Length: 288
Image (cartoon, rainbow, N blue to C red; front, side, top):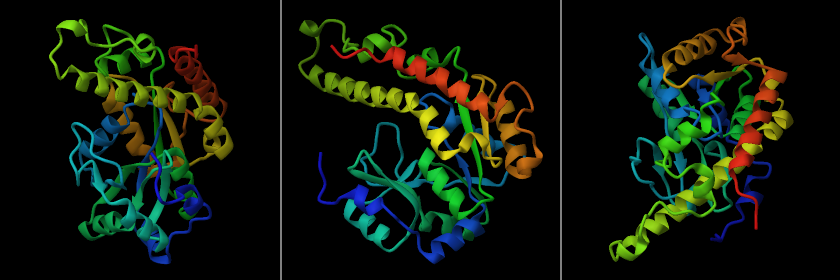
């Protein structure tokens, strides 16, 4: 699907307005980032917000894409038309944004930050890897936490989350359908097949993104960034992950990255992401 806008060209050299930069610093925004599917990013944000004495509030991104099943507009994200989003970009009203798949705009908008400032809570949100780097250039004190899935259980947990425990990720990505007997399926079963095709494409892109994380982190130097915490999220132990994240957010570099085997920095991060890349590529079937 093409758009009438060249979003990549629009993104090149983008600079937020002076008021957007001021709001970013004033807000005290905290970022939870990660592009590895199944990392527990959303669960970690909820856990941090629910910690006793916490004053965090989630601020949604502004996106031009449609709503997915289970999402609530205004809560999970703020929907905006592409035309309006382009106008806001031209006015510098996005703190950071990315041309998602070349057809949509997804980013952190000035309006949501100002709402957080007015409400008096500490904003926390998810931001893509490159967007986090952009925010860091605007505010060097930005705290960012990257939850990383426990690799030993990663794909299995993702299969359970996506309802693929009986078929397996590799077979599903290879084209195997979840439908058992199409000859006896309801007449409208093609809708289910369409949904499966969309899920298959989405998961494949997520695995491809996971396989590129090493290169992205290396190029951006995030593995050596003192204000960025990489922490392995043990499934079922989110409370400890949230508590360590909260300490890091409040204390920053004063909290060592390697407080336990769950926290990493430097070459440890790159080694982990190299393993994640190998696993991600292993479940993507080779082209025929």
